[in-house]
Length: 222
Image (cartoon, rainbow, N blue to C red; front, side, top):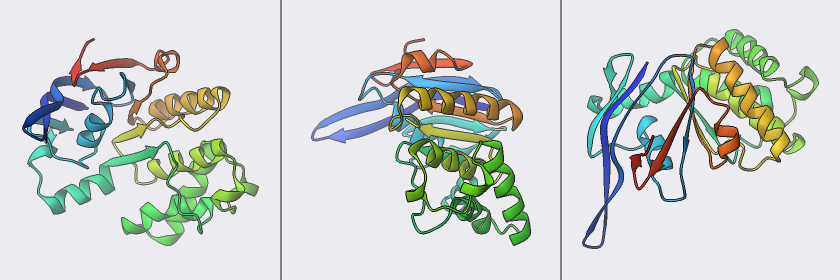
């Protein structure tokens, strides 16, 4: 379970202190698919960065399975990001000279997983997200946007993370493909028992998630 308690992140802009995240508290259970919505500048991406331990909060707690990640040291945070968190980005962020299969195997290599296990899990995940066998040996430039995002989702799942964080994962896709990707994430949350949190500007798609958190000026409005 992911539990956030009175989370704050302040930035200094000249002589002014800006509260990008201002006292956010929320709870998301294992296997739930949640979305964070709000206008540009509302604090969505900052909140996602804090949850993924890419940035440190000014104050507050972020607890994953009763471990407060705000108290972890740098080396522990690196391991946390590798073992517990999967990231999916709007721009896919795939390694261009690696095949789809190799892209999914990469996080497992960093985690020290044996090569035969890496390949078997990567093939299974790519099949699970709907990328057919004949496309698994293609590099990203030979895949459509929707197919690249499926690879990115499979890669995010590679190390059995507790939480997947997705920042506008359908932003570069047409509406029909975007809906398919959201449905896929919803199914994966259940089948993998993984908490998935998506930042999106699309309220219609966000309405399909289990929980919707709306941010305004760094604060939750519902």
